Length: 420
Image (cartoon, rainbow, N blue to C red):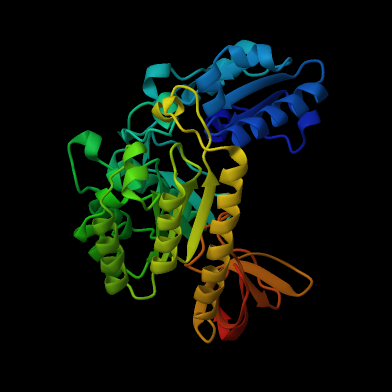
């Protein structure tokens, strides 16, 4: 949206009070995200000045539509997830005197269209598909975004090349189900080909990271491709959601835990240094103490490097919302605490195994003589950091000897001639 507006002659304002248009890109996935989005809208609505308009964009807008304008006084317009390409036209309708640029017809853009990218740092996300065709009972994403629509490979590669040419060092390929890329186009193993295309292009990233790879779509070709190319981070996010087959069946997820164990074994055999992240839901309807204990046992057995634990959120319109035996909130919170305590110890042990290694660290900032960055083992904003003694510039990649492990972070010191 930012790029489309700038192409149409709009300029960025650094502070809300200096803007003509205020845009909040909302999330409508779970209760806490919705509340955060509503809080941001209300805050801007309360401070809105004469002549300003407030546009609610994104998932909450898609899900609640015009109701959102009634629930937050001061919202002037709505832009859903399937309408982002209309942002220029929508704002010019609300503020017709603020821009005289021609409006691009709606049918020229779609949710999977590639638009020119402007680098905003050393890392950048590139969406390779939008929407989801998985039937997960707890998830509202298909209701919000519709079925999966994959972006054409040439469009993905063009975005990557633009970003790398502007200095972006890390490209993170994302979708609601990254490993299902291309299936809506009739291709069932397209992600390895996309990776190959990115890595064979003229401007290649230093790091290429994959997020949200569902296990049932990970093929031997994808594992081989990850292992064969140094630019592909030995890191994978596998959103498993649970480990007990009965819980998984109620989630309408694959209950094949034998296959999951085999996949993890294959990944670790191909890439012994791989960092694995996953996410689990506790307190799902019908979750018994036995099922929860099976989840804890699985976590202890697999020793994941990173784990996100989420308390089940009952989402209107989903199949899970109609399930009996909803777990009391207090019990779900107690299970959350137990799972997090277990994972904290596992995380510390996994970090301790890094002490003595030399890791390449992508610097994100510095303060008081210490720089903060991430290794290949850490995705932006959701994983830990590596603290490097000394001041290094953002965007530099610094070879760092790891000297100390914390629960979720690492500390180290740059080796001689470390930066590039």
